[in-house]
Image 1 (cartoon, rainbow, N blue to C red):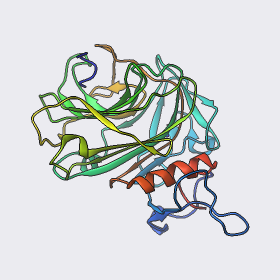
Image 2 (tube, helix red, strand yellow; image 1 turned 90 degrees about the vertical axis):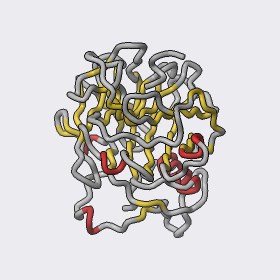
Image 3 (cartoon, one colour; image 1 turned 180 degrees about the vertical axis):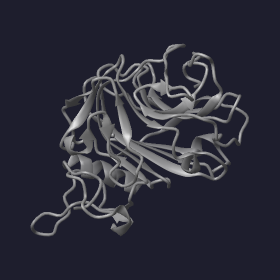
Length: 288
């Protein structure tokens, strides 16, 4: 096993607290739901949402549309093509999006559940780093502050790793190959309350399709995601000081990214499909 494996509108005028706690698919002039796939299912409002539209970017700061977890654009990240309005284009070298050591109360501990969603268009899917929150032996100096990570395998299949401190974690793979230079929508869900099968904690929904899963490594189980200092980021792994980790086969993400969101619940498959359908129809996650 490689060492690396262990290891995606205008700003709303209302206060986020005033919004409904669910979002639904848009309707056309006849009142019919607009959707390219999936059922007409409401989903919860994310705990953090970065549309990456031009209206949300001010200098190197990218606004969180629903909360106060603004991100930082590292490097000279440019506007790129997108699925919904505008997105960002990462060069796979010295550009990534950093959010800080945040949301430990969502990710770490026993019986936690969360979901990640984003659109990505990788220039090269092989081993590309997606969204991560872990600082480990790919950093200099080496660290053991591992929480979770998502990336693409050599064949372009999505992978999710969840880990305790100081030991190997559980790597779960989705049986699907991502194409280069094509937009794909990813929803990763984690349900830490499921402890009868290591695979059952994780669900992959890619482009509205729930994937079969495989396990490429199994630690002592059950295990919980640890609360160690680790920075949330897209496109590269960061150390506990927020510095890039590039050792041991880490491949920064090169390509487009759009509509990044995090929920503090495990979305159902139907909810994940509705998130995908809304983006595929050209809409952001929040109902207007």
